[in-house]
Image 1 (cartoon, rainbow, N blue to C red):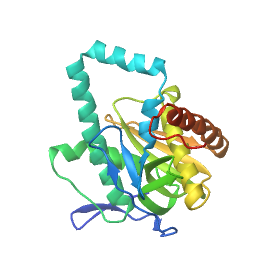
Image 2 (cartoon, rainbow, N blue to C red; image 1 turned 135 degrees about the horizontal axis):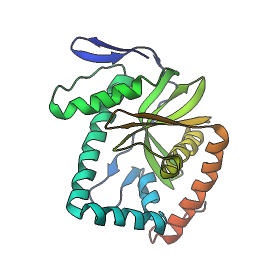
Image 3 (cartoon, rainbow, N blue to C red; image 1 turned 90 degrees about the vertical axis):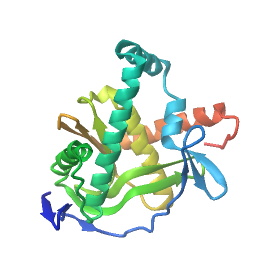
Image 4 (cartoon, rainbow, N blue to C red; image 1 turned 90 degrees about the horizontal axis):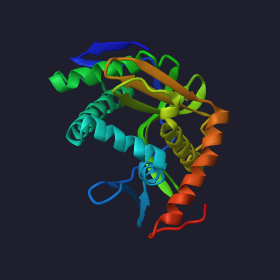
Amino acid sequence: MRIQRNDSKFKINAFELVKRHDYAHYTKNDNEGPRTYNIGQAKVPSVTTILAATQSEEKKAGLDKWRQRVGYQEAARITKQASIRGTEMHYVLEQYCQGKGYLNLSDEGSLPRMMAHTIVDNLGKLSEVWGTEVNLHFDNQWAGQTDLVGVYDNQPTIIDFKQSNKPKREEWIEDYYYQIAAYSLAHKLNYETINQGLICVCTKDLIYQGFLVDEDKLREYEKKWFTKVYEYHKNSKTSSPNV
């Protein structure tokens, strides 16, 4: 997939934009408490809210140790910087994948743009884009927003873009698999079946990692995701749907 510069913008033109589904859009609530989405009259917990509420004690302890090691102020700075960088990288990729093009010449835009270009350079098998920043929900039990739905290597695929400070080991990214599984289940319920997922990671040093979630692994994590959802709602005072 090649990046071209036209009219003072970078664009990619090696795929087809296909409006295969009329994807719905839902507003979200970020200001008070954990993130929720407004689905009709219901406030539905986000995928990331469920993951945060059900994370293991081991993972919580690991995060606490990291904060203690680097210092709480430095940890907050690193987290904020990564969030800003990730937001800009996602926006660049969204504009590219919508065929609009984009170029932010500020200092803050340079590194995220290069990270986005690194990801694009590794998306040669992407042939169709059905939607970007696609909102999905599953029967008011969870909701979320995936970065891209389309056809990758001839298969309907959920794709998520991730920025990272350093390369990931597979054992560190289980939450990413849960996210893909949650989006896949919601897409199947409302639109059509997804056969695989792809997690595209780029570090601030421009190292790319692609984690393909094949159909067997996707179905495995879909089942495991239901367990997390059940645990979340069982412990929630506001909702206890049947899963």
